[in-house]
Amino acid sequence: EVQLVESGGGLVQPGGSLRLSCAASGFTFSSYWMSWVRQAPGKGLEWVANIKQDGSEKYYVDSVKGRFTISRDNAKNSLYLQMNSLRAEDTAVYYCARVGGGCSGGSCYAPLDYWGQGTLVTVSS
Amino acid sequence: EIVLTQSPGTLSLSPGERATLSCRASQSVSSSYLAWYQQKPGQAPRLLIYGASSRATGIPDRFSGSGSGTDFTLTISRLEPEDFAVYYCQQYGSSPPSTFGQGTKVEIK
Image (tube, rainbow over all chains, first blue to last red; front, top):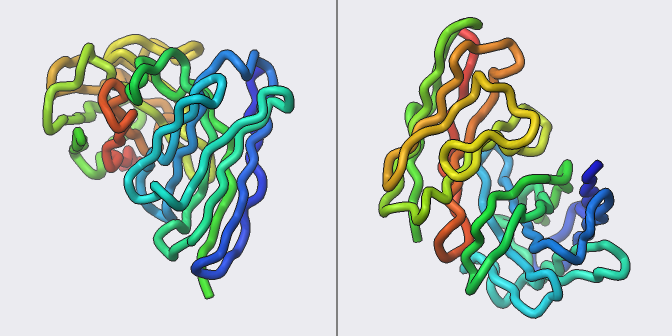
């Protein structure tokens, strides 16, 4: 059974940093692109970042470029999101998700087929 | 960036009725790379439909997707109590890798 379990969320002050983790199990983690998607309270879904199987390609939504870094450790079956210079508008539930197929040059050809339960990040003073 | 507009914002229906949800793209979605997700309160989204019309694993056949180009539809043939939720469309074939619609809430009338 595919499982994705996020952790690391919490309350942080504006300008602060936080590192989210996602532990994957039930599939060959190193064979899949992975994503982070966020959802502000009461709002819709927003794709945040993608990372290739070997970590050699990474893509971000414009609003987090230069502040967030996606990474992975295939030996630990884990995905990460380092979030720096956090703003109030980054407040959201952050989900990790598996891309169900390939991607090329930033475009993916498969949907997000499995999602974690999410971890809440609150940016507030 | 492809903008997805879902309508209506809220759909009020009774169990057993048919639900028709619309997703319109600001430009053509390549190769019908369009997905639908269901989200219930406090839960993660669940993939229902991909490639505009293919059901994901374990999804009941009362859910169906159709459309191409810029106009896509999710149909729930007969609403079950567990189908009342928010539904999102997503395009995943263009750069940035994906964008979502704003969601349609299907509520009990």
